[in-house]
Length: 267
Image 1: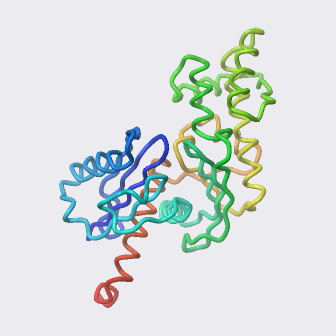
Image 2: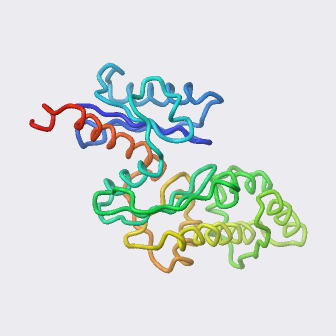
Image 3: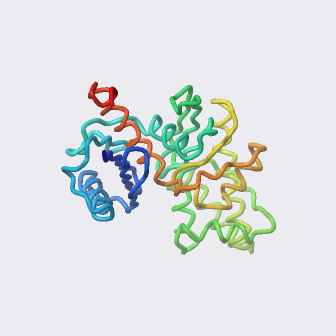
C-alpha cells in the first residue's frame, strides 16, 4: 500500500511516498504563493517519479504552515510530530531533533518510537532560521547555498552582536566595509546562528542521538558550529534532511490508516 506525506513550509514544499515502510519517491520545490499550488506541484512530481496516480494513495497526511488547506490530504498533523517520526525512521537512535526551517526553529525530544516527549519553538523572530541566512546571502550578493562553503573557508570568526536579522545585515555591511573578508563574516554568521539555536536546545534538554533537519541542515558550516556549541556530534540520517517532515507525515499516514482499518491490523 502507498502512503503520502506533504510538507508545505514558508520557503519550500516537500512530498514523500512510502510503499508500506519503504520510501519510493521524494521531491523538494520552492514554494509557490498559494500553498495548494505548492502541494499539488510537489505531489504531482513524486507521483510521476513513482509512476502511480493520486487515486493509488491509501492515505495522505499534510504538515507545515499550509497543512490545513491541502484538499487531497485526509488528515493534517503538526510538523513537530512529523519531524520526530521521520527522524526516528531514518535513524532509530535519534532522541533529539533540531529542526532549522525557513521561518522558525524547533528543538524536539522524542521517545524510542519517535513520539513527542517535549519541544520548544522559536517562531517570533527570523533570527536563527533559513530566512536569516537568506538575508545575509543577499547582503553578500550570493545564493544562500554558497554561505556554508564560504564559512568553511573562514579563519577568524567575526562576532555578530545584533539579535535582529535586519540589524545583523547592517552589522555585516559594516564588517565588510572595515575590511573583514566575506569568509570570516560568514563563519561569524554560522556561529551566531548556532548559538541562538543552542538556547532552544538548552530549554528542551539534550538527549543522544542528535540530528538536524530542515534546509539549514545542508549548511555544513552551521552543522559544525552547532556541534561545537552543543558539545557532541550530529548523527547522519542517511537521507535528505529537508524531507524529514514529509517523511514523518507519510509514516503517520500509514499509522492513521491502520487505526481506521481494523482488517489491516489483523492482516
